Image (cartoon, rainbow, N blue to C red):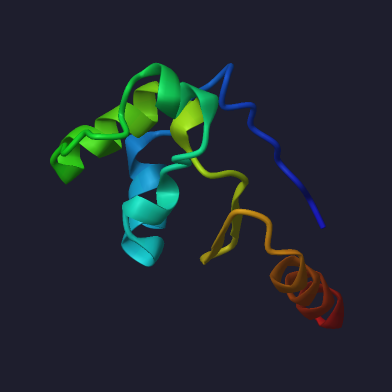
Length: 94
């Protein structure tokens, strides 16, 4: 299986890529509220519109719950080892 790793500290995720994840999981699960960066920015009491949150996630990748994983059209958010294993097995069966 070919893997492409992107270090979000060096190259932010595109808005379109993040939008795919938001469409599947919603915006709130994408935000790592326990992250140091979330605390540093004082976002605990923030009530921002979704568009602003999406912009902020593009600008501040340390706010994202990671890893964001894409396999073809399939997506996972966070550590999902059983799902990844099923993707590998399915890919091997081809």
